[in-house]
Length: 515
Ligand code: NAD
Image (cartoon, rainbow, N blue to C red; front, side, top):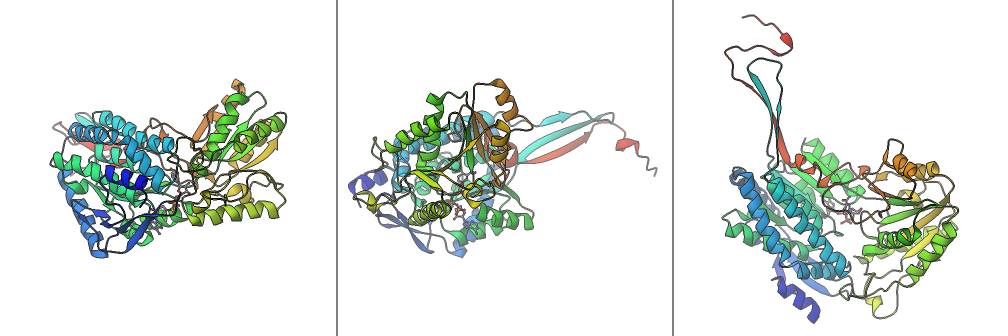
């Protein structure tokens, strides 16, 4: 193992290239299938992880249920105090955890650290929430009666997460789930097991110190089969799934079939619209970050760019200059702006999309190839690409599918209605961004005839949300909401309680049922 990888792993108490257990339910175990964590920058094997055997999986699910039964009666502000300690423990390791994200997932260090910071931020939020998860008192029509809406802990929450945010997505879920009094079992992406092991180790120490069962925040590494078994389990009350539309469709149906609760955070296909009055000195760098940041592997990455005819040539020439200056390389180096794609399979997805663009006479303004010189050829590096497709039909795969790579397709429009129509014409509805200084455009964009996405920004790019608002998308993005806003309300079991404190027992709606 390279010395830089060893340094990061040992700082986080992870056994470098040795085999290690990938299941935690109060104790570390795992005698199932072995899978590898591979560095996308160098191709080196960082570690070999033992997934769970079916028996271990069932045991872990049972232990998670048991942990819930003891944890649900811990008062919410005390749960908040545990979250505060988790926050402190994570904050102390932010830099190393961020480096681990860069090492294992491939995003550049500032973005890696940023995603750990997001976990810290949502812990802060959930500490506050632990004293504010309020129910309601509702006026009753019957004398001497009160109606309460009471939030109680829900049960076992399974978090199935994607490779591209190997820490933050779990953070959004765990913080709310723990504040709500649930036990959470995490099934991370099979290609980012080390991030999940490092986080689980940090959290388990805090739980242990507080005498809380470890299975309150358990871990179950593994692939599709382990994920499917968790989703099927009657022991799981809420499945919070983040991943592709294809897998989300299967997961959604399975959970629905057993009448479980499901929260889906699926693919995005996000557009930026640039009006003629936009401040291009802000819009051009924002589109650059949106399309090239995380090498185009954010669910909120900018994939579609709609330019008003009057500013299109100027915008594209400025954007191309930024693309030409991009520094690809080791995501752990401060000067790098573009890290690798996460897997080799993603290179084929990128190449196939470029080929389809070429086959349909699109103009490739810049990019379109793999970096095949040393040292980048050892990793999964591809050039960020801007294309002007000839096909404008929004239903065509060029516009309607999420290609998880740094490809930005651009088109020219003449009026805002056309641009909004294109923005809304795709199956996905995650993020969207309008650049304008005209209040009338803003009103239209955020109103009933505006963007149909879950995130509707103005003079802010499509990616890089804060934790305070509920995060998520509509349509085939799955309608889920996580993180801030009212998202916590999904992690509790709501009880409507009518209490009679009178000497009579009248029926509602004046119903008369004499006995
Ligand atoms: P993926 O769908 O391949 O995998 C996601 C998770 O599902 C993994 O943990 C995987 O092991 C598991 N899984 C696979 N098959 C399963 C099955 N049959 N049953 C249960 N679990 C199964 O996604 P990915 O490639 O890791 O991530 C990229 C995708 O995630 C992109 O589409 C991206 O837009 C999306 N994403 C969405 C958000 C959001 O908040 N909307 C955030 C991050 C990523």
